[in-house]
Image 1 (cartoon, rainbow, N blue to C red):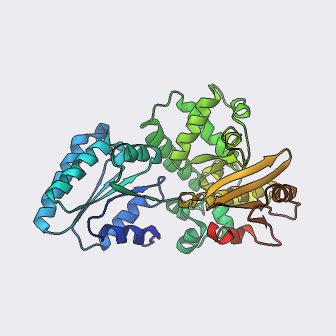
Image 2 (image 1 turned 30 degrees about the vertical axis):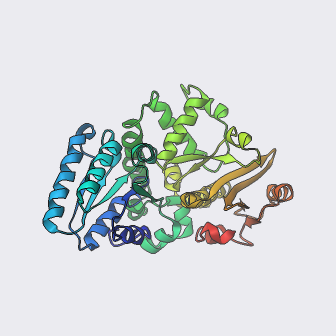
Image 3 (image 1 turned 180 degrees about the vertical axis):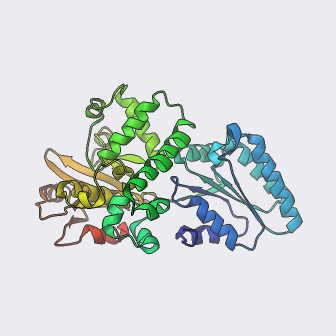
Length: 393
């Protein structure tokens, strides 16, 4: 995996080579290659550098942050050149953004030529710190989950394997032993993300409810379910406000989101029932009792898995300005409504020869820029997950 370079490598490399670069912030879920990318960057650079992680720092000690920064200042002065300081899991440091602001401003005043790279796996906490203290001092690079083409190039994944096993590079070599793969996803990825990125860093009054919401939500990935109906399937569910808040936290960790219903009325959009969507199909299928081959032999189930994989693919481009919703009026549905630069397109996913009445109704009612029936007879889902959404507009 260390030899694989994501396209973001060149982006950040070009930025830090500029004169007086801003603080570079890499945000993204666990296990998408943030640390690997920075280590590759440092290894390829001729500049002196240091990499530190706050993951093991007790109680997010602020004095630790000041200590490593001072060490970087000394090393920078000794080298007489630009110096790169990379700090991983920065959100673990208590009130990190205020301390970084103080140290960064001191460097600006004293001409310490230190390039700062910050990494974090909790998008919500990172953005809170950035907007509160570091306005005008940073650039944010969001690293999404790996896309199909990356998994194909790196590990030879087929579209079907991407749909079932998802896109965690660290788990790719385990797929020949599915039970081992499922345990790895559940125990090493999901449990770590929930316990370290959510429960330790946020006030969660009902941790069991958050876990149950995640497991139920990924099971319904690609399906619409109201919070009211969801409460009927969860023990000690509290209220819909609590569930909506926990779903926001799961979204911040890159685990699970709820797509909003398309409507010309924004108020109706915000009050709609969510269409649950996992960010990575591995999170959905690691709980299945079925194997990859058994799932493919179940047309109804496989259709839902494919729909979810398309949604996960689209979500990797969300930070590039794409708004992703769904449409539902009565029995008429459209899987994904994409909006980009004022244009709207509709995508209906079919893995067999089925009618698409919902797509016809949506076209007649809203006249989108373009509509696509993704089916074996036209543009296939296997082709779709190899496209950038811009190509559809």
